[in-house]
Length: 157
Image (tube, rainbow, N blue to C red):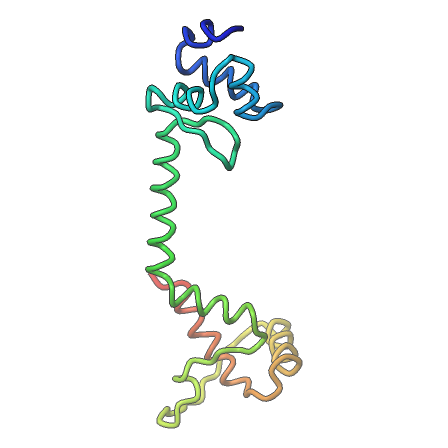
């Protein structure tokens, strides 16, 4: 295919052809193949305004895809901004083996009440063993209280 044939192709077909060549050649090499100056070639490829060259993928892509990606990136950024505190807490928890107890669990002004709860013996044994192994410095009652609070936070509607 020569320069004239390339220029007479529909823009989408021209992009397909150049993208196929980009798998094995650089833009400069393709421009030389078709007897174009590099800058003229890249300008011609963008002439209809529907495509741009993506350095990341080393292909020509539709401009609409770029706008969609930018919109998605903005949504992600907004989500991160809105949930910054929660994300920071998650990262802190993941980076440390420390258990973060809510201050209400160990508050000096808290009042306590005895409650009898019927529970699966095996689950309670596993929980008690887990607490003794991982958090021997904390009371089981505090860990149960924190577990209840975590449950409420996780499943609130």
